Length: 278
Image 1: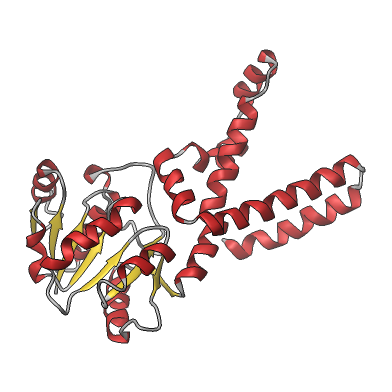
Image 2 (image 1 turned 60 degrees about the vertical axis):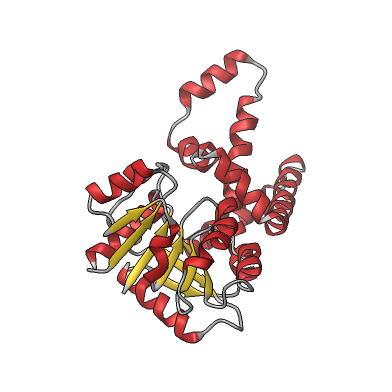
């Protein structure tokens, strides 16, 4: 089987490494010739080119570009694919992408490997990145079951945990556990940074330790990615933010009214709920 990968950054490069470790041919396409040369030198791919015609013999093609580039990239490569090729992507938003690309290519299946690091580019690619990580496929009722099975088998090679759901289910679930935390975390950083007493602010910075580090990590990440989350998953993110705000308002009310029993019950409930998400 020949695997095509468009975009040889962290995710695309790591996919290439994993598939090469399983003795599959990997055809890598990048906008930059230097990236292609690096991928070839490192043995990450079998062949590499800036020319999308390299994908003409690919059986499965992974679109690993930034979210905004997924659709135009799909539109650009379709003419180079053989009719039986399966096309998939790795974006963290599925609804709009599936709705746009599925009519253009019947064998398109939305996908989302939930793994990564803060690093970017071909040099950030890692072996074993997807081991035990969730990998979600979002087929539609029109999607070929055979195509889903082929992708599921490839995901099994990655040693990922396979899940399958409708695009809209994926987007709301990811809004809760991935996109909302970015905005909650970013708001925490912004709120702390808005302290007008310089002595308090400096002391807060000096005392910040594991608690602040853990809760602020995703809010201090890639701004472009956070922006694309909001643009691509707007409705689901708004719902999550609104519901989160209601929880904050309730906590404020409990503290203002000194309803310590309600606070204790609230924290006991969240203590019990957290393991279900981990």
